[in-house]
Length: 501
Image 1 (cartoon, rainbow, N blue to C red):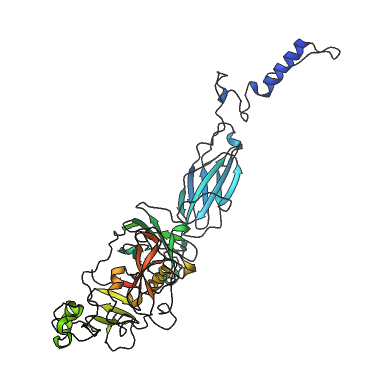
Image 2 (tube, one colour):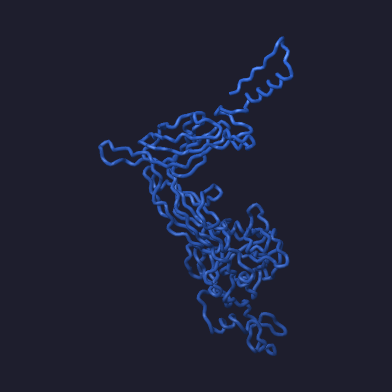
């Protein structure tokens, strides 16, 4: 380092010596270099060219482990001596981070197990036998810049039996973590089943299964936002999904000690939305004719007189064919309606049964929800706002949630309960709901022998109004009339599912 001395006599400094003193002072404060802990403001690394900009203060290099040697309860670790552009190696801070398990992690105060300057090895104690761990080394320079090493996994040794036999495994992560089946059952539902996992310390009956779902086809790291199921069951059904969309699923199984094992990711695609159309239609239910003086008379020529042969409603269609015994029914019902009562277990019961949960329409291939008066999910007097978040079917307006008193909540509740053994219940479209109206009667306009407890009021359909998306179609089962109604209106609802296409 250049030493600068300013001479003065009688405390008087000439301008020449003052200039020399200032120049020397600047040189002593960083002009020449030579201290490894100091970075020049004009010269990076002592370059001979003083005009070269200083690009110092880089993060440490050569940050990696040399050896990892575990025992049953300890692990000895050593690492390379790191280097840095501004901080001497003997002034670098070394931090060792460790977590239990076999997954990546971000170093934090909770994971730090060791820290020191100028130390390249240590031994950690108090570990569990035959347990998976992962370690990371973090090296920081004097400016606080840090470099994190690659993750290093290791497993501690097993405990030997007192009798000298084979090692006894202790606290390993669950095994046999894999899916059995993953299937899109319809455009918005995925059903998944998985194997019963095993563990060395935790009984299978108390292992926790977590199912994660991510939109797309790539592998992913599970997060809380993607968790769709947890518990000890080995199957679940995910609903409310998008049509024609790829989903990736991952299963994670955890034991009592918190050790976790993830499955490989599986990808499934939901099918495209297919709007339901009826291949067969019910007739109107009108079995009476009219003449010039009387409504709802029989259709004989003696009664109709000059009105005979006019092909009135009761003279044509399924109602006429059933009345004239030209076709038969699978079940029963008024006029040409061909209906069967279905039990809670999904079995057909006798037409005179006093208890049934669903109604099968043998003509249209639809199964309908039966309404009850017990105050439960299928209570006939409950009303709902129209609500659907499915952009493919809601016409551009989701409706109103009404604090959960809406059609979407009803659908989810009925599907969760597996009404009659099924989980594909939905709101009927307008044509479907029209199909069970019996125009041959009113108050209510339906076969009340099968559709008991039907209310004289409006029931929602799934169809939004084309020229007013804040409204949806509803049908009044007092007389079969229709209405384009505001989706926030509180109306009745009867769910349906398709039995046959």
